[in-house]
Length: 363
Ligand code: ADP
Image 1 (cartoon, rainbow, N blue to C red):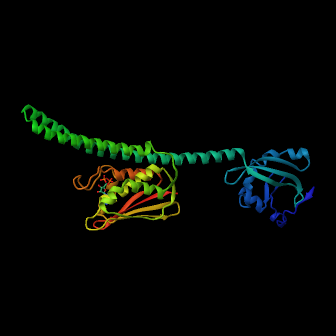
Image 2: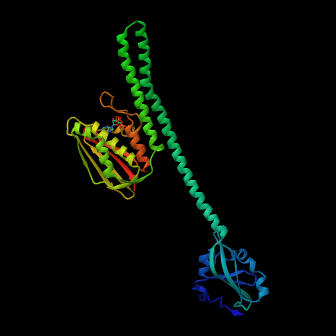
Image 3: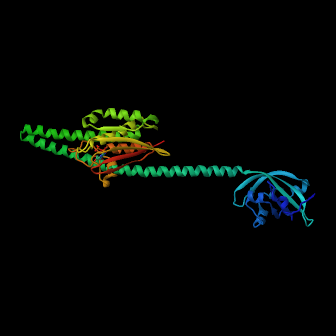
């Protein structure tokens, strides 16, 4: 049997392996720094280690074997987590000549149960955050639905009311034999019905963004913008608009939706021009860390700050149809498309100077 100089701590202090010395009854006397590092038990609380699962299986076995032996068991760390350790134990003579034991821990890894628990915890926290994300999305969808239902029912009522009242007038005119008036009223009925038709068509366009979107592919925005400009060529020519386009990047997205996005924004920039000056539009891009920031700047009539949010809501317009054509759905569609591409859209504008629409697309 070896004699270990327990009093001479230096002997074990620099051991890479964790070493624990106990008396014959497994009362811990000394743990080296590696032991403290591995288990969290230090001189202050080492006595608590006496009841540790690590020491249980060796009782009596060593008595019978009468020599050093290696075994694998669980060791509960000071923080409560469990390690599976491979250790050796042998008898020693302590400085006071009594019999003691020296434990050396050769390898340690988290116990399978502990690993499973950790994996389950990770999985659980992933599921939790996904759930929270879904909940957030659902709240947003519900709010959007409420807003949509309100706006749609409000805006659809108007042409419908017109149709109904003119049909009543037509009925009256027919009763009174006034054929000419019927023709006149018929025009209003047709106008109302056509407006209903275009409102419904726009609504469908909005709902298609999420339902009927294509898969994302590498999309060259230089090509995409030139397609959008081709679609708008006659308006550009008629209004004498100068369009400048910076070199644009390739992004991952739904090409036909991005054409629609640029086209709607350009369409507005061409439509809301200021007759006082030659219309100019500039499309540029800034490469940001995780996304691209695009801007479409015009020198048109501009928008008051208080309307900055409202214009992205479906059917919200700041002008009458007699001033500027439109149904007020273009920007709502833009917002949906940008959000589908993981970005955000906003406006900066000054009345009488012009507007800049900004949007981001994730890289
Ligand atoms: P629409 O163009 O059919 O009216 P949009 O949703 O595209 O519908 O736009 C909503 C409103 O936002 C417009 O009616 C207009 O008042 C305002 N707007 C959009 N773009 C511009 C712009 N470039 N300059 C000034 N006003 C704009």
